[in-house]
Length: 275
Length: 275
Image 1 (tube, chains in turn cyan, blue):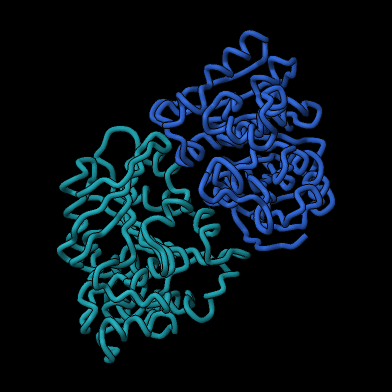
Image 2 (cartoon, chains in turn brown, purple; image 1 turned 135 degrees about the vertical axis):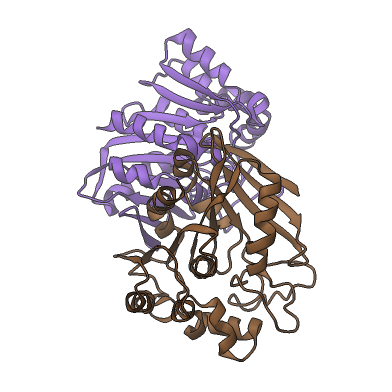
């Protein structure tokens, strides 16, 4: 593992790291904020949205002050493999680089797109090996938009691993949203039955459960009615008894202005559950 | 005045605006954060450093949460004129676009570089005309690096206008630092006597005073010994009775990781003095 940069912030250390991933077959970059004080620290994973890398939330997420105060280690992976022979789709922001959708692709040409396994197996193991202060017995996960989809689906599929989950403006039903169904078809093939394992609502329909979700959604989000539709998630949770706190936030859009505003609330949500 | 974007953040509004400046003879862009609640609000000016625009602190400065809480309007101008026939010096980050040094240039070819007059006359007047909630009887100023130089010199030259001033890692003696003396020579000509009006230490030597300064400086700042040298400012203040709180911050560098860490302290410093 290579350290690309470190800086002191709010008494802790914000680092950026790169390693050769056996899972994706590419170099992968990720960011870790280690709070000040003595570890071990609970590990909170933040998954980013379409077009983003580890960098956007590091620049604009405003998580370090409260993470330092609460003693949370924040891990921010990239959103897809990049470089070399990775199918980039530079002409389409909803496919390819920056659009990994936190799944394991099965279609020809997309062999590098294995973000689900990367986040489930390889990166946690690397974290445990290189970050002595990471307490992997206390993990939470959250994310934004496509990363909210990632957080909800990873939590529903791994409730024994994650003790807490929340999301900002998540894609809750990617199988039926224009900006995401194309990706599922491209990475997983034409049969929608294969998409259900990477769709939060389908997972709930198929019996998966998680302790409790917190979701914030801006009412002025331009993707609200076509891509996000949190009411579908609310219906799925209510009809199955899945615990959900959905907060509609008047005036807020889809940007990091929205995310940063409610970041403290989410960090508190996780800290309460991670001890 | 044209509104380029607005977004709700921490209950207030982060906007970006553009207007045709008579002072610089160019279009000028600036950002304003208006806190939630009923105005009028004190106006706190943030001046950015070399290579920056209004955007960097808007992305990375983490000022909105506390500005919302304290009821401060935050105004972030650009660092120079840009576009058209403006001398850009794209090959030199210490001259031209992004390097206006908050002065009024007098040399041939630099007629657009009038940031001192722009910030002293035109932009405050525009703010008063278009932002009904801006209370121009309560103004403070702060900034980073070149913008720290701007804040200190504007405050020393206009103590009747500004009630508060602080700086992150300011250039305190640009006349004698490699990365800034070239700019003073280029914009103001070869005679160092003409540079004194834009040099905080020279201004103090020449009898200018301000109520009190707060300066934070990272000890791991790579520009500390050549470009910044806060001890020179401390000496000038101590030998003249100028009030200065200088805080050396172990481990911190020159980046927005440093600025964001101490942003809350600076906003409190200003709020206390702006009422």
